[in-house]
Image 1: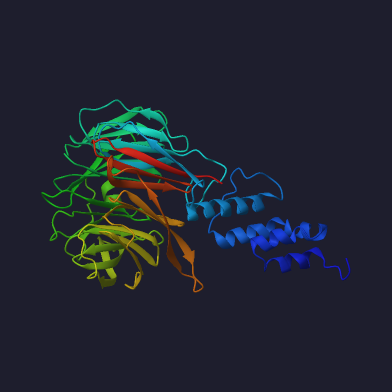
Image 2 (image 1 turned 135 degrees about the horizontal axis):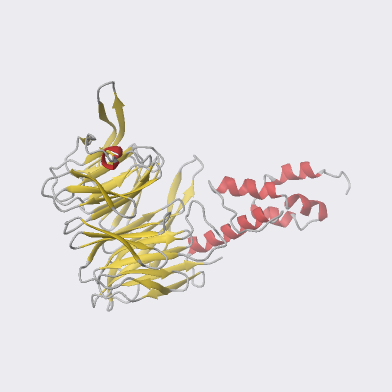
Length: 463
């Protein structure tokens, strides 16, 4: 080649190309092909586009980063467009009651997707007294627990330990093996309605259960050994139960009384084996708790919606020689006067963004209180919201789901773009969507049946 460019110079020039231009450049000649196939170029583009990349089973050699980039880009294009042929939809039937909870047991997360694995398992629990495990891509029932006479009232999943945890209408808490559905352990709380929160602290497994009389019980290990009992709000159901990203704080509150302040509780005071351990807690300086969320990228920053306001707090522990006390510092408070609905769903994506669903509308706020975006894509109230680093999915009682994806701005921020609707079937058979969960390449939602038997809809995208 005349005026031959050495490979390093070509690689530097190719850093200014898009993936399409880079693929075209590789077809010019052998030298350009060698330079364009350099793994570093494709790795650089992948890490510029996505915060974390998991090559997984992508293969070895120079093609790995290129294959990863092209496969993930192609899959995200399908998931962004939602065109016919880009996904499959399967109906998962078997429950004879209302589905009260959904959760993944294994799947590919949006932050660290495994593009070469197409097996995801989701679990559901119902008022028919059963817990069921489903294969999402094939739409098949993997296992079902024996039917109990007592309706299940709450369910959560623990992917790390492959466990499902349920609570029924008598307050019986049960753990189930995620692969077989075998019941592992039980504990009777006596609560007629329970709120479940599972977490790991210092490599130890814990479960906190909130009850109708305002108490929270903390259990240790999958064998469910009682550690502590703590009263949050006398005579009212604990409806909010959250743990901070640093696992140091639990927030508990109720939506049943707008005069009762939510509390932050020092986690170690609930998990300690010592009966003499002081139960450190602090009421937040707000009245009521319509919704709350911890900011995932901050160790202990909490946002609370209350009384037409949204207030953001930082929580920390101040220790002296003789005592320890919880310090709650208000970071920001701003009005929600434009929101008329009292039923709020609050999610957080990062340190700068809060997603709030109210009635038929979806709002995106900055933590400084600026209304960044609003969407009115539904004709009936939004019943569930999913937020991750790639998308936001709103499920509605109008029997549709709206899929929105995040887009990077030139100023370094992100905005949401509405993409498409996913429909749940016939209104003559169904009332609307009630729950939604996602992994990287699938969306699973429950549909309330007119006959009292709910159905799961599983939408799977393939590259």
